[in-house]
Structures are given as structure tokens and as C-alpha cells.
Image 1 (cartoon, rainbow, N blue to C red):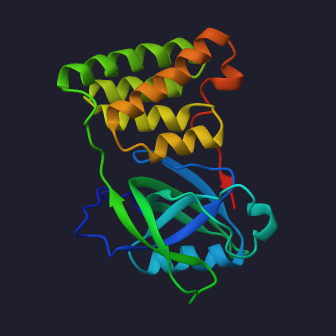
Image 2 (image 1 turned 90 degrees about the vertical axis):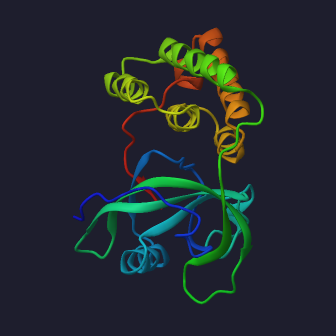
Length: 235
């Protein structure tokens, strides 16, 4: 198993292309770690290529209708999360157990002609912006987000511990929204909308609306905190 590395990534460090790992049931966010069990031959190839190069993989969500062409190149949502392989185990059957650390939002500009069994696209890194509010407003949103999330947490000590760790270390509003969005048990379309929103304060407001709905409904299983840490996702 490889050791953990530095998980920052600047625009200058990135080639402008990304290997795509599309799944129908997972939205990855920056600042979080996702376990993956990779067994399909094309995605085994993808992991091997990443390990031999920059260890970067872009997790993308398949768009509705993917079932008709899953083995081909079904459409994807236009915002993905670029992650780096933090650790992996190559299993005896050729599959991989991977820990992928989310790094940056990327926009899919165009998919490149097929040269491999896996898909590759030209992408652009999308940085967080803070147009919707000033520093005072951002601080208020940070406090509201913390209080709202703690209200709907089920008995999940690890999730609460991670949230408190982020706050003790003065995590930015952008980081906190990403971590909470990843933990939140809402629909894939809602998660994808949170990933696609680069304005941090708007993303926080959107997240607060989901957390308020969870508190109002009193139904954490429908719109509460998902299992944390997550189990291995399978392709």
C-alpha cells in the first residue's frame, strides 16, 4: 500500500486532461477520501495508468439514461471531481482497492477520441469563488452550517469528530461545505448540484436548505447524514 502524499494541486501542475471514472451512484467532493473497489477491466486499466503517471483520476456522475449505453460512452454531468490515489492494494484477481482523495472541481470541456478502454477528457480546474457575500456573511454561514449539521447528525461519533476537527483547524467555508455535502444523505442530483456550485456562499445556502429540510422532517434517513466513513464503492 502506498503512503499518503501531498494532496494539493495547482492549475500549473495539471496537464489539462483527466482520466474519467464515471459511476452512476457516486459524487465525490474535494477534501474527502473515497474508498473504491475497482474490478471492471477498463477501470483496472485506468488505475494502472494513473499509478504509473500522476495518480490523478476524475470521478464523474453518469447522466440520466446511462443504462442504455453503460458499456460504451454514455453522457456525463459537466462537473467532476479530480482526485489523487492516496493508497491502493492490487488484489490477486487483478482488481484494486483504492483510496481516492478529492482535490479540485473540474469542468469537462470535451471528451477526447478513444485511445484506451477508459475515457479521457480535456478539463479545466474550477476554483471556488465568494461573490455572494463578504467575510462577515461567510463567517455567519459557517456557524449556521455547523449548528444545522449537528442538529441532524445521528449517532455517528466519527462524523461529529471530523466536523469538530475541521472547525478547530479553521477550515474554510468552502472546505466545510464540501465535507458536509459529501456526508449528507440526499439525492444524487442534489449532490451534483452542490458539486457544480463554485460560489461558496451560494453552495452554503443550498446546503443549509437541505439541512433545514432534514431537521423539519425529522427523517435523517431520508435527508440526513450518510454512513461515515463510507464503505467501498464498486464500479
